[in-house]
Image (cartoon, rainbow, N blue to C red):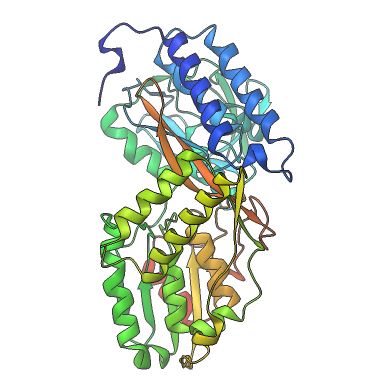
Length: 468
């Protein structure tokens, strides 16, 4: 990793400059400051900056810079407002010989341990230093990750409670109370170094998640199973290379696919990307006419018509123009949005309204397949952004949501990235806001048939779905 400490640096000044730049990028390009339905947004942005600047007065090193910036970003409670650290600095990590995570019942339990740890796997955390487990995690982790009320966020980051990464704005636990085999146990924590070589495996154990490979399979009973672990729309991405042949084969074999006893659209591992992939799959399975007859998912979206956002859309147009795997609909969409934003800015308007322009009359002429069996939409807790859009679309067409509760997103979507002055990180900032979206801000999708087992066990999931 690039060592930010290779040369002396005034980290207080670095924090002030990057926090101010982050604030100004939000003010200039995020829809929030001009969104009359979010009147407190400007205040949130200003308050986040003010806290970061106060923390700068005591910042002496990279950890102070990093955690102050993370706290500022987390204050938006929006998964699409982020800090992309492009030049990470190796931070010494300590742990007390164990890590906890949230179990299926919402309890914080030991999920990984060193051989000499005094606590067994499954020991339940009750409190530390007189602070109950739930508020302790919210204070020490949630305040620097945001959206702590979401199950998905606690599942993803709960394992950080007993990781000391040098955050100077929290007090690491010293003495904790656990419940082991129904009996209380007091533990004086002995913090020690966690080797870099062990970190990934230890942390992954606190938030187990499946990461299946892309693919289409036909099971022994005839079930068609489509593993779709990502929706990245960048033509150079692995997702954009893997999805087109899967979708093309689905389209070419729709007769056999529609005759299957069930179809499984497996979204485990999918964190979002482009909603166009879900649209293409929906058009094959249910027909474009069915999509166009759905009640609108929203009243439209308003794009912030800023210079930076317009340049981003123009970049999409250039990248997609000759890309064979980008649908014509996506290319036309980029043309329309870029032109609309440009025209709005020329008129002095801060926002440009995009509305659905699907040609329902042309789509009505298409013959939709008649599906013999049910379509199951399988999710885990990490499904967000375009993955959530897929769940919304497919279930509205008749798909049955199974698996785990998803992540959630705010009404602010479609991000762009901007380098911060230090060069250590980029600001990730949404460009548009939904109007009248049926699913509310930061509201997850909950399955009709929840699954309580291990989501990594594909064979068990196959057996379970076959019985639904």
